[in-house]
Length: 328
Image (cartoon, rainbow, N blue to C red; front, side):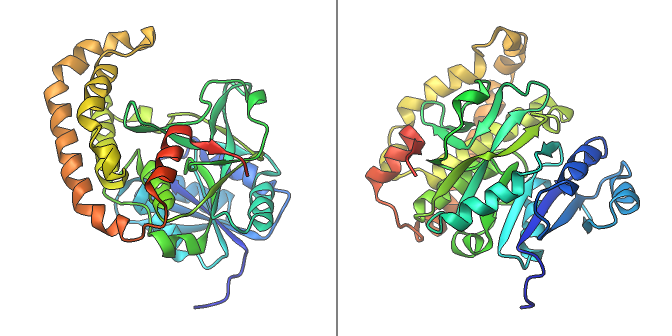
């Protein structure tokens, strides 16, 4: 294996993201550190993304895929191509602060017992509100969620251990992928970072939240360009994959109790802004249930490979599933 030419490889998955690339790549060019390379993994875009990047950002290395295989296939291609000590994953609809990458690298350099690091993700158009201060797991909904979403940025200024990272802006030791595997390519989109976070917890790996690593994110800018029902179906299926694949068996036994609450929350949204979706959600409920059954089947088939790497006890796992955050 050739020696790494940079300490960090920043992998940016892209599919028809030309409208976002100028902001994203301009911010990366202004980083306070220079020992990194940027790899744009293009999922067969048709909007001129690759041509624009080649003309305006020739320093960016481009990996072109022949089809749109979703987030996981794109980032996995970049991870496998990397030869650096660290791999950073970054959504194309972001703009990082000048100290973003340096703060993440310094944090993992200083905390050798941590394996990956989560950024302080802020809503792009509402910079006083949080997008994610790491990711946690909501047992009641059997789904991962961004910690602190919508809350004031001032409340998330301390470095902490968190359950996991939002893969839209995170730094990983490259060795971590050898230990726990790559992102699950069957997810296509949504939930793949929740799966990865729980697999890391099972394997005894740890994630650090780094508040100095600030990044603004155009939340759901890519997902909202996709058909609503397809995103709803994928979310239901992928959340079921995660539950069946990654939850301790003691927690899985509770799912017959938790599932009705989850179904009601998904069908009758709490926020008034989503109430107009209720007729569609009711009409699609049988198909959504079918997607969840498919997800359970897929998750159970993958479960043995995940749990053979187990290095965390059940009580410790349940603690992190319930709390999601702790002292460094």
